[in-house]
Each structure stands twice: as structure tokens, then as C-alpha cells.
Image (tube, helix red, strand yellow):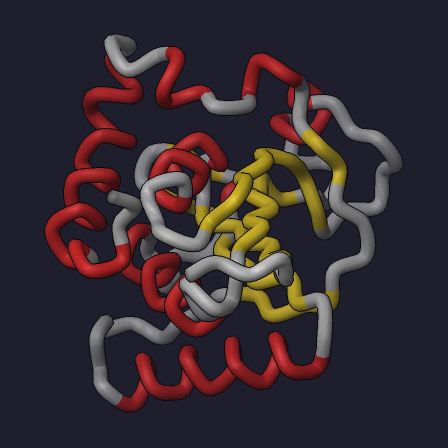
Length: 181
């Protein structure tokens, strides 16, 4: 049963198209908006963020119902679908805009994210250390409209088939109990 209460998570794990496609699959997720955070240039454009000079990361703003999916659950999925051990890189995407980051909106979110990262480190899921940035959210900027709902609108494109589709499939396999019906 869903509630009227929602919370927001801001996550960066490489290309925002990948994160958006995955989080839209999860029960309790109301909206996913692609955008930019963590930089110092107001109202950045995609082209400017891609230069790596603004300090922004490609992020998703995930609005969710915490009675259906917890912030911790979202973080567990997040750490499943990207490599948090590569500094400023996800696969072939290289630059600070592709860094792994959790932009927290409260002390509670910061603490949960730190606990999840500590647990992953202790369990040796990766052989290299986690380099995910944990920082307070300053400002979220919505990306241009053609970046929203990208995977659904462009599934036949090679990038979508080669990079995004496997991540969506992995989440469908590993988190079947958390998927929308």
C-alpha cells in the first residue's frame, strides 16, 4: 500500500541514462529525473558538463515512497549497477561528470550511505577501495528534456543495447522482489 509521503535521493554513477532506466523499474519509485549536481556553475548545459570543467556529475533525482522502497534499498541497487571503485570513470565514460557520488539531503541519508559503503567495504565485494563521493546536495539542476526517459525512447540505439540494457536486466534478475508489477 503506497503512502502520500515521498523522499528524494540524488545519485551519480556514470551516465544518468543508465541510472534512470534502472530506478524506474523499482516498486515505490515515483519519478526519476536526470540532471546535474556537485558543481559550481549555475544552470549548466549537458555540453558544458561534458567538458568536465563545471564540477558537476551526471545524477538522477529519484523520488520514492519509503513505505515501498527504502533509501537503503535504493543504495544497494545503486552499488550493484555501477563500479564505485573507479575514480571519475564508468566503463568507457571518463571524466569527473561520470564519478560515483551520493549527494545526501539529510544527516540520516548521509549516515545510511556511509553504513552501506562501510558494509560493502567490510564484505570485500570489490578488490579495490570504494571511491564514491559522499557530499551534501547543494543544488540539483534538471537536464534537458531530450535526456529524460532516454532509455525507453531509444532502446534500439547501440549504446542503450550495449550499456543500459544489461544493467536493467541485472536488476530484474537480482531484485525481482523489488520490481514494479
